[in-house]
Image 1: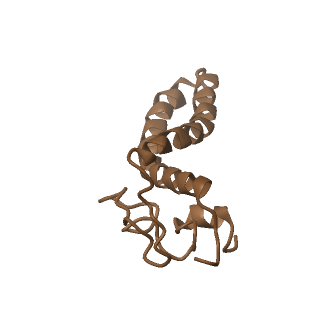
Image 2: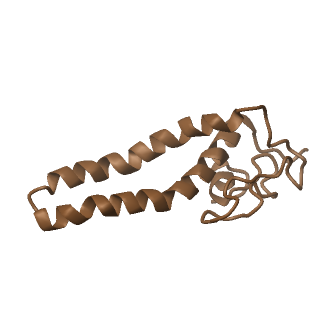
Length: 125
């Protein structure tokens, strides 16, 4: 994955414009305090991250298909394994725990995807 691609910016949670500054005040996918706290502007290129009021509400619509892609196959697998009763009683609690663990990275990645849909990488800022 090389710099200059949208995938780089999303995975590394970097500014979509310069891909140097961090999108979040606390970088990384697994952060447990102030998980959605973002600076108002990129510290490097001064790109405004506060696009408009309610902008990040649409990140819910970005994360929804991601959740479906991950969890529908798991739920279908759980129903097909219903005959294995001993496995089945542990399968859904595991899916629920998995969902809680993935919640923070999904929220952060959804915001990164949303910003990358509206802001392009450039070397001239």
